[in-house]
Length: 483
Ligand code: ADQ
Image (cartoon, rainbow, N blue to C red; front, side, top):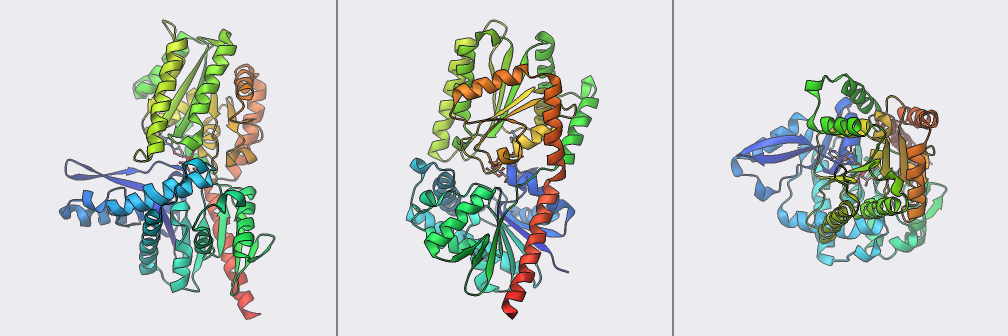
């Protein structure tokens, strides 16, 4: 029977070492969270890296790592430190990530990183080929593996290959600055179906293909000499039921079952019943607009001092890519901003910002989502932004207001949110004020609409749609051959 082979840089599980023992925990991040349910419920294997480098795994635990992965139908790709530095921290996160998010000033063009990126992509492709059997569907994910589709195609010309890009695809004018632009496009075009979160990213990709490679593009199809590649948008959803039922269970917790975080949040509510909590959750990343958000919040307090002691920003930032200099600088900038704003506005009984710099267990995420009246998400660029969707899914009493940047892919399907430009502080301050004062009836009206849409287009539906289109694309390819 044919299976689906999912490939992403990281596996949905993360293995770490604790006292000479292996500890398995779920991976954080949009892709892993989203696809996990598809993997759990289907007939698939997942190929990716565990989070431990070859040097970090003691010899006697090497087999155990494989076994732990296997228990979850996963196959681990071994990466050593040199590979990780060049492939992941290097080309993926210092070239592709900033370029695709329009941060050209952060984009490096290091040939050694590129060479390592190619080598590691080949390593992933080789492992896929080891496990590939005729009839399997191969689903490659994200910007770390852009070359993998064509590497598989070269060895298995008839393979059915899908590729999904979880981050934006930039406009031609930005993409063309990449020294290895042809290779990257050819790598992606090894797939039969290429998916993006939004129609805009799809359009940008097609325009680069036609202008750089000069392939003929008809609507959303690229005509290669021997086959057609279909390009389409599939806005990724979330495991809606999981978030909704976690929120419902959360409200049933007895006082003893409550987390320390929840007790603190409740205490805030009791002490200041008419005060509002504003939530933000992101990986600590310059694309997420965290510094802008803090400055806009400061601007709001400066201009609307009547809200002092009546509002609090609960900001959770998850450590991410802390080996990359820009991320280290950003961490310092955020620490300083939080310190400055808290120093400037705090009173004896109130601090405007609660800042957490850590990863949190799922239960605590639910505590935050369910307790905060407003979610303020202000990315400068974001492929989709699942946090916005998760917030909506947990609002089981239908109250709450989402303020969302128009630069997030999610904004295109979440019209009932208050949509803002993350560079326009007046607009953000206005949206905060509007959210604080929004009548409950209006909150519920907007929230119900958002929920209805998200529930319908869940991550399961997203994955099914992508796979169905992939199968059809393969059928079309067969008929193209027979013409
Ligand atoms: P990310 O940039 O990682 O994903 P996002 O879509 O917001 O961004 O997903 C973050 C995920 O991590 C969420 O599912 C959230 O629940 C989880 N998470 C956040 N903070 C956490 C914490 N402290 N502890 C545990 N879990 C936490 C990339 C792209 C996005 C795109 C996704 C999916 O950058 O634009 O939406 O892939 O395609």
